[in-house]
Length: 337
Ligand SMILES: [Zn+2]
Image (cartoon, rainbow, N blue to C red; front, side):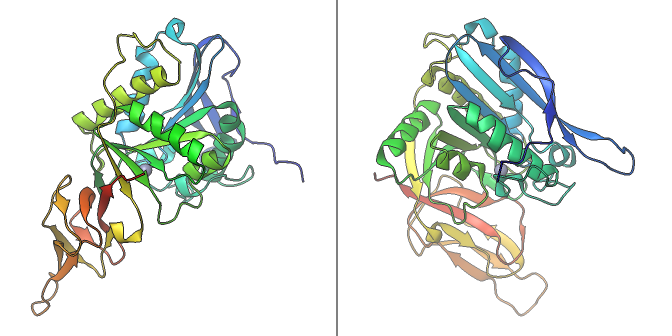
């Protein structure tokens, strides 16, 4: 069966030289707008021959450092300094960004669980389909910027998946080191189905993502780590000269890995989480990392949570109020290739 054609149109020409600011027009018929569209900002910068880098952010609408870093890059970059092409979408989940929500409020879907999407699907599915079927094939590498969002806070970091193909693993690790974050994480996901990460990796292309703080805030340090990482990657992929004034910020300093499900501390029931440890703290396997208070009961003692893995705390739940099944902390081990 022939691949379904996208319903999304755009006013940018991906082959045109220079910088273009335009939109992806996603059909969205609604009560207030019969032939309405949702407009997704897109910037394309092209100068001569060279690699194509696809830069995306805002898959989750409550994560802001990535969208800001990408928007700032489009204003700071002189197209004549570029060798190749950048395709930049700072806010893929526009309705989510407007509502400050992870999940797209138009269709209730998580964009980073919806790849490769459907041409004839909902807003989220149409955007996922366009990115995976139109944009990823044009790209040599894809970097998708995330932060922890409302529910999590992360040590600012650059992330890659553990890849079975050794050569591709090393090539991706090289780019991760070039990003120049304080922390680089090699992760084995609990559930990677529907992620852009997985789709790009299965397409045989290089993929990186980030987690830049969280709690739906804009963190000064995490933002600047994201911005520096962007410029460092442009140098790494040969898109700008190594002596560019915005580049040259050093390599990723510490490498850790999230090896398996024991790395995640999960709430066994509803309560209010009191952490005993901070992001960046070292913990031992079996160490108490926090307790869950059952504030609705005078008789229930708090529930103690322990680390299933020795290592460093790389993320913690941001809000105190917690439901059963929420991720309270993530612990990473030193990376041992
Ligand atoms: Zn995210």
